[in-house]
Length: 71
Image (cartoon, rainbow, N blue to C red; front, side, top):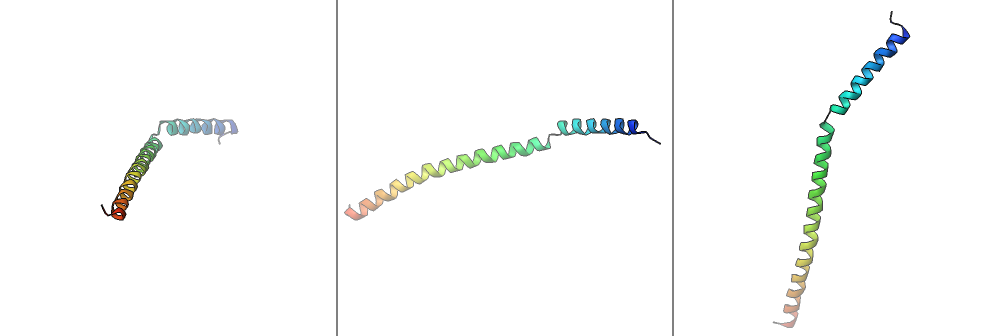
């Protein structure tokens, strides 16, 4: 029969093993890298839409001016 102290010592050893395994595990790091990459792509897309949106709006206004003046 295992005494209280021996059971606690065994539990402490397993806890240390689990913590060290968790710290060496890099699968979560890969997920966070994908999240950062996706955020950067989203920021680039939003920036492109804002830039193109302004340009397209200017061209549409220019076209409307040409149509209304008959030139």
